[in-house]
Amino acid sequence: MHVITRREALTLAGAALAASAAARQAAAQIPAAEASLNLPVESGATLRILRPARFVEPDEVLFRENTARFQQQTGVQVRVDFVGWEDIRAQTAVTANTGSGPDVVLGWAEDPHIFVDKLVELTDVAEYLGKRYGGWKFLGEKFGKRNGTNNWIGIPFGGTSGPVVYRESAVREAGYSGIPTEHDKFLDLCRKLRAANKPAGFTLGNAVGDGNGYANWLVWSHGGFLVDEAGKVAINSKQTVEALKYAAELQKTFPPGTLSWSDVSNNRAYAANECFLTQNGVSLYFALKNDPATAAIAADTNHAPMPAGLVGSAPQSALTINAMLFRHSRFPNAAKAYLAFMMEREQYDPWLQKCLGYWAHPLNAYDRSAVWNSDPKLAVFKDSMNNRFWNGWKGPINQAAAAATAEYVMVQMCAAVASGQQTPEAAAREADRRARRYYRGT
Image (cartoon, rainbow, N blue to C red; front, side, top):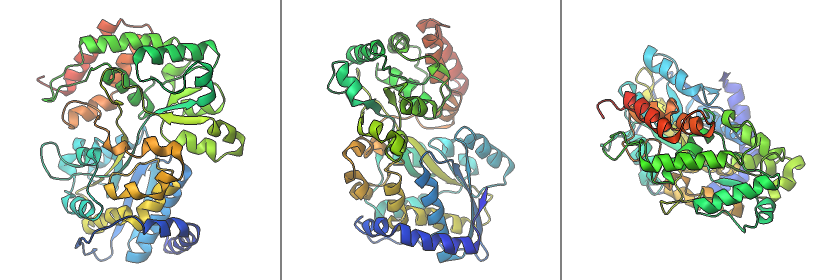
C-alpha cells in the first residue's frame, strides 16, 4: 500500500519535473487535436487506485510521479496500491462483490467484461481521448467497448506483447539468420539449440502473461481457436490436436522445469545463460540492458514476431492493463479526470518512454513517441495493440472468455500433453468440456 501525502506529492512532482524534463519536452511532439471533457471534480474528492505490480521499475516510478502531478494540480488525494499479477483479478472480484474498495482498478484486458454490471460507463473519457489522440488501436477498442456496443466500460492503458526473445549468436550457431516463420523450421531451430546446449524455453505454468501467450500461440498458429465468431466452443478440432502434437515435440527441446515456470522464470533463466530463446515482453531486454552485469547479453539479444505458422501473420495478442471505474466510487468525476489525465501526452509519453514501451500505447498519436526510434530492437513492440488476436479468439470478449482465461483452459490443455499426462485427443476433449462450463449452451 502507498498513500501519497501532500508533501510527498510536491516532492515527487518536483523530482519528476527535474528528472523527466527531456521526456516531457519530447511529449510535446505527440500530435494532439482540440477536444473537450467537462468533469467538475467533486469537493473533497479522494481516490484509491489498484493496479498490477511493475515488471520494469520506471513503470511504477513514473506512474507514481504522474499521480503526484494529478494530486498537485487538482488537490485530490490519491492512494495507489500495486499488487501481484496473480492477485489483481481476485482482489477486483472482492471489490465488485462487496461494493467497496478501490475506485479504479487497472485490471487485465477482459476484466471490465466480467464486472460490467458494477462499473461506471467511460464513453465520455474514451471518446475524448480518441478524438484528441488520433483514435484507438484495434485492441484498445476491442477491450474497451462492451461487446456488440459502442459503450466503453474500460480505458486500456497499454499492452505488452510476447514476441520471440533470442540470442543472435546462438541462433546463428544453429544455422539460422533469424527466427523462421514455419513450424517445421522453428522446431528444427529449437532442436539444434538444444543440441548446442543453448536451449529454448517456453512456460506452460499458470502464468498470466507467458503461459497464456505461449499456449494461445500454439493453437492459433495451427489454425485452432477456443470458440468461433458466435461464441460456440470449437477447441476440440483437428487443428488443436496438431498443435498439441507440436507442443509435445517442442517440449523435448526445453530445459527441465518449464512446465511450472511463472512469468519471471524465463527472465531469470535467460539472464543466467540457461535459456537462449523464449517469449517475453520488453521487460527482459530492459533488465538486461540496464544492468552492467548483463549488458553483453542485451547486446546479443533481439526480438522477432512469433512464427506465423499456418495463419499468415504472427498470432499474438497483447497482455493489456484495462482501467475500470466502480459504481461504488463516491467521486466518479474525479476518477474519470484521473484516467484522462494519466493518458494525456504530458504524463503518458514520459511513462511510455521510460518503460521502453513495455506497455505499448493504445492511442494512434503515440506512434510518434521518441521511444520507438530510440532502439531498433523495440520495433516489434510498437504495434502490440494492433494485434488481431485476443483471449477467447475468435469469439466475443465477455465473461466466459475471461473466465476460461483465468482458469487457464488453454494452458492446462497444452501442459497435459507436453508433460505426457494426456494424449492430444484426450486433452482437446477435456478442454472442450471445461470451456463449455463457461460458454453455457454452446
